Length: 277
Image (cartoon, helix red, strand yellow):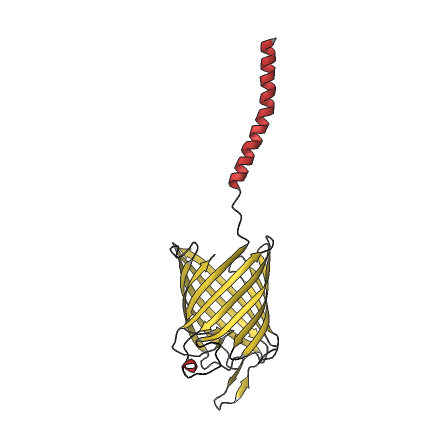
């Protein structure tokens, strides 16, 4: 009887213990498999050098034969898994002749322009919707705008950007829409990207001067088309996920819509470092 009771007790203990041990093992595996939580605040610092300053197809400085420094910083604060807040800035820094001549139109010696923006982005499935309020400060002006962007994380990464100027400062309330796409691929450690874009805009977004020096206002219609090629390699010696990239983008613009360009076709060469954190 004692032996039977002992066996019964062991059997009962095993029946209780096995599910508990199984649950414990499953929980341990689940805990081990659970990824580390992502930081709620992330950012990206970019230090780029360009041959041209291109603003929606406008070659701002023209064929200046000088390198332009364009640093930028963007911070993101995750509110939920799908929604984040965005704060960023971009600068145009160069040694233009106007700086050397003492022209006061620049912000601070070699700092020609400072842009700031804030807003948010919401992602559902492959689609991300981003809304940003922007201020572009340059030459004593403060140009304000709102941007709405739809991007799809799928083949060719299609996107639609609508830039609406608010009519403050030196310019009116005009609109530019840019349809973009990009084909990305890798070859060993090198990541390649072939971006393309095309724009249409309302009349008056760009202004320029004709051969007689008379101010001309751009018409509505096709603004520019662009096609580029860039290559980037990881630079882990700087920081994790940092990369160095070089690229070239060709632009074709319409003189009637963008009258400020001295040449309707030009190439922008760029090189820089991107440091996520």
